[in-house]
Image (cartoon, rainbow, N blue to C red; front, top):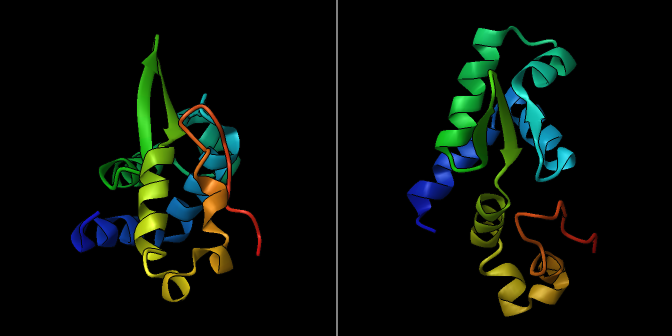
Length: 118
């Protein structure tokens, strides 16, 4: 991942509503959640939600799919892992076990996972 890509991802997450959306979608798992459900849960008007979802999608952190007339969003776990890997690339002077980042290696798009706590 290039620094410029990491900055786009970090900027997308550096806003309260977008961070809440992303965390909600990570918890929702690979099936994701409908835009309407996200809007209701976060009490966010549809146009505002749409703006934030587009920013997260542009950053490569979420995906969108259409089912009939509804839009569903899901965390893009590869994008999340790429950003975390970039941030932790030089973790603890080449000793990644200190950061316990290896716990994410077995995660894929079909699993919702988070790094183990050190």
